[in-house]
Each structure stands twice: as structure tokens, then as C-alpha cells.
Image 1 (tube, rainbow, N blue to C red):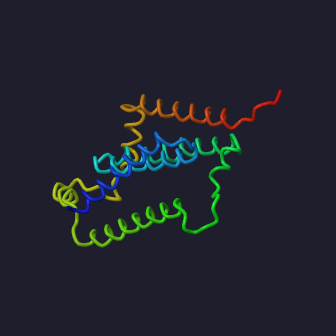
Image 2: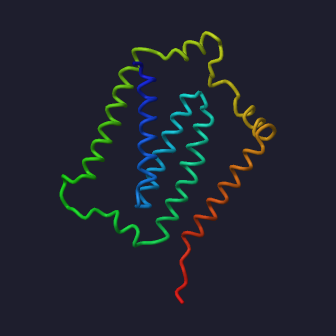
Image 3: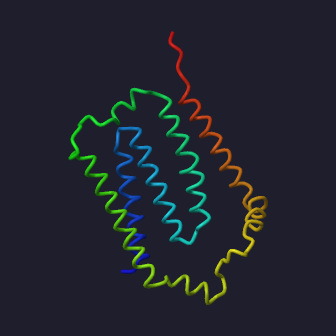
Length: 182
């Protein structure tokens, strides 16, 4: 099994597991952090589909924009909802601590494995792009072509994303406002 397949399966398993936990969890704060994991895993899967622009857009728009707005709206909306996030036990050996430790250990082992394995073999798609001459170089001017595509061919999706971000901002502002007591 190659490094690419292992990383693909890690992203796929991470996305599926986090999505299953997301729909079954009752705590809104933990659900938002699971949504972060799902969106990040999907961006990783987009990279394997050679849709790097979609992956970067996924991270910038959804993870960097919408999800942060939802987290801020949640944090500003109700202080009692945040009370159950604080640890009730003062012991070091508690189940959430072990879950976090295992997750951190899994990420660290994956990073070490990829770092060691990447130096040994270069992926086939890099060899193909070098042979075909389609390798993107730092001197290539992709920003101009991307801007031209945004303002001509992809103007409708670009505007839909901007309206979606505006709706998320209005929703976050609505959730964060204080209710008047009567």
C-alpha cells in the first residue's frame, strides 16, 4: 500500500467517522468542532481528486469563514451551553483525555510515516506532470487566469458563495444578539 492510499483512507475514515459522530451528538459546541473535522477531511479528499482549487476554497470559505462565524455565534449566544464543556473531573486519566491523546498520537504517527516515506518515493502523478510538462512552476501566472475565470465563466458560483457567506454572517449576528427580558 502506497503513502497516497494510506493518506486517502485516513482522510476518508476521518471524514466518515466525524460525520457519523456529528449527526449523533447532542452538544452543539462539540458538533461544531466535528464539523470542522468533516470539512477539513473533505478538503483533503478534494486534493486526491486533483481539485486543489476546490480544496483551498473549501478551507478558506467553509472552514475559515462559515465555521468560525458559527463558533463565534455559539460562543456569544448562551453562556449556560458552554458550562458543560468544562471538565468535571480533575483526574488526568479521564476518557476525554485519553481520546485526545490517542487522536494526537494517530496524527503524529501519520505525519512521521508520511515524512519518512515521502523521501523514498515520489508519487506517480508528479513524474507524469514533469514528463508532460504540465508541472506548475512558481513563475507561472495563474492568478490572472483564475481572476479571468472568476469574472467570466464562474461568475454565478462566485456570487452564490458570496451570498452564502452573507447569509452565514447575518445568521451568526442573529444568534449572537441578546434577547430582551419582558
